[in-house]
Image 1 (cartoon, rainbow, N blue to C red):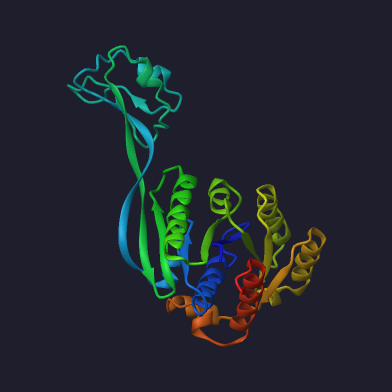
Image 2: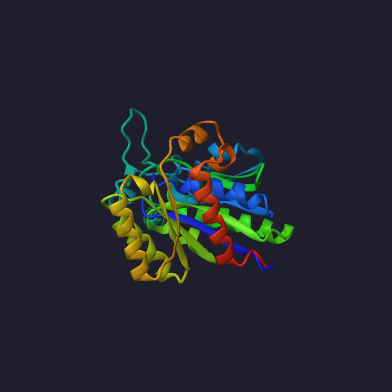
Length: 301
């Protein structure tokens, strides 16, 4: 069976994307081996539900920052003049004569490096975060933490997904399940790359159709087939019907309508997917979602 990649996305945060992903992980693991990836590296929370045991930890090196050698600096001020990001500061302390770079403000453009007449500026890689391989009761999980204020989250997402895919290929697991980041930015594009199917989670709110349209535009642009699931559908039936009508117009199947139930919160607080915690209406709706997603991916063969 060819390896399949399923990515769970939403046009905004807080729609229940991780709740759905955790439930799918639980249901899928009962039938097939799988590898999990949390691609929301800016605010990873799938691990809060899956209670992983960390096995590996690796540094993630992001962009470069400029560093000035204080011994060789002549305080000519050229570096400050060419910096467009106000990251280079003149000496401000007594008996300190060298310029200094603020690493938080430095964008790594290297303009100061190339313009320094004394050649005492060097570019150094900086650690932007960490990525991990962990074990869960549903399968291996790759996840990461991007440090505050750091960029290259798209690159870190790609790394996490790549590691998950390589392990799945090595072990023969037929599915990589990815909890994607919210929105439509670079991390979402990285999470969607190479996916066989995207499951879009939407809530029946005033902005629901707009949020869905944004993320659907992203998956369409990159040629990723999509399905939709409406979470908390019974809270606003009129909006849910509006979303369903929009999906029908765009040719996107709605594979489930999950009702609102406080049992979801109870399950998350206890660190369980809702399908592991209860057999009620929410769990039943999610089982229907998994059955339809599994069929679409061809995992029944």
